[in-house]
Image 1 (cartoon, rainbow, N blue to C red):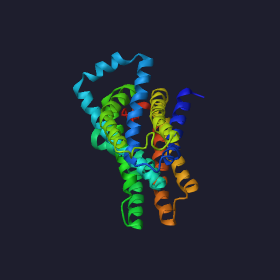
Image 2: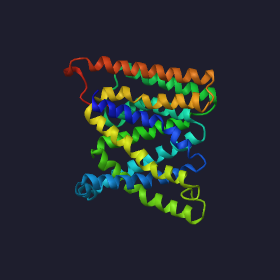
Image 3: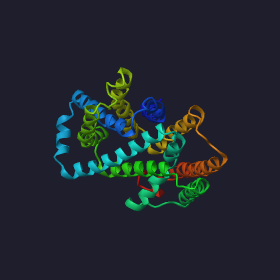
Image 4: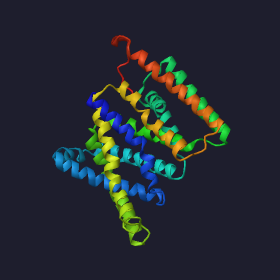
Amino acid sequence: MNKGILAGIGAYTLWGLFPIYWRLLEKDPAIEILAHRMVWSLLFMVALLTLQKEWRSLGVVLRNRRTVLVYTLSAVILAINWFTYIWAVNAGYVVEASLGYFINPLVNFLLGVIFLGEKLRPWQVGAVILAGVGVVYLTVSYGSLPWISLVLALSFGMYGLIKKTAGLESTHGFSLETMVLFLPALGYLLYRQSTGVGAFVNQGPFISLLLILAGPVTSIPLLMFGYAARKIPLSMLGFIQYITPTLQFLLGVFVYLEPFPAARLVGFSLIWLALVVYSLEGVFYSRRPKSNASLVEPL
């Protein structure tokens, strides 16, 4: 099998199994887990950049003020996404978190229309409307917006939009983002440790090891995804991406036994149908002669 396909499947499978990992740390505040994730991710990337002898090329990037500002913004958005996801998993909202990544491809298309001037084809419009009906149904049936899903979908969509337009290679981009987040995260962790409430060391070697491994656990699937994105068509990557929310959904319902009443099933089914329409439309459109196809790649 193509190495790019394997890398893509591996990345999305690891992301889909993330709830298992973060649940092992559920006794700790989400903000502290997030800070450890930031700090250890940078240290992992430092080791990787040193191994690959990439510091000189990253130094050129750091001297570009606009690039640093753009990646500062993407780092903040990424932190929002990470925090929301960790909190949702450990608060028992794995199913709602999975919904965010189910609707993310449709959010990407909307952002492309708004910010990149892309055109939605008729069946894509139908898919977006159908997903919107599903979200409205869930809102009415539960009496409140599925805000976890919407925050995750919008933040990851905005993050993807910035990454699409910023243009840095994935290793350099992620390294820059973790550099931006490193000092605030480290300062917070030092404060927690100084007051005696920090998880690191105080909760034993197993928890400390999990916090350290949050760096490579975060970085490795991102690097695998970056490799896959360069090696296989985006249309194929678009299908593979549903591995992540599907695994999250199955974990939430069958492992963590989160409630999934009929009302939620109806709302989810509308969104799943929208994704089927969206995906099949993309397949049929991609088979048309290239002269008739859009030259703009999806996010």
